Length: 192
Image 1 (cartoon, rainbow, N blue to C red):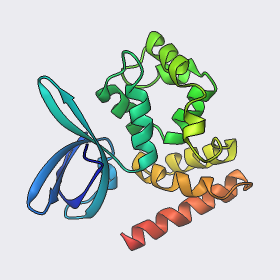
Image 2: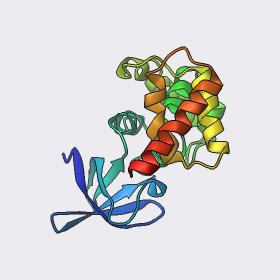
Image 3: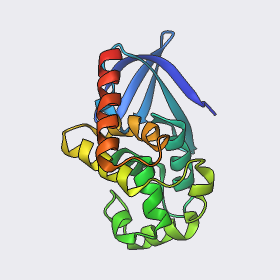
């Protein structure tokens, strides 16, 4: 399996990206086009999906997101396109917490997920994601801060890129997490 690809962004669309790696263009199903720029050097973690009539790559911003995707596609009736849409729409931590809390209504709100599939996700994955995640489940304060960043107009890919850093600083208030998130996002814009 191809674990990751590092290269320059050659082109991208709503749900795909083409990475140029030493003159070879890899077309990857990718749910975070807002997080990339043309000719930007990036690394994308990948999953290679093989079927009788299809060979495709799915790309992720982090190993955590890739691991969540792999857990999701292990659920009966949940394919890679639906799992990718789920990972693209919500932060890793929010999906994990909704599964751990048995929040069927949240899961049903995801693209391509109905009542039966939401119940199956909870049945198959509850208790398995937190142990796979070395960090504690995300606090309410961090969730509030991530929602605050979203309401300020930041894209999902940008928010997800700072979510792990916020989790590494336990015990802060929602406002402190929001300020820290803004600082991290500003550093990324200046540095990138």
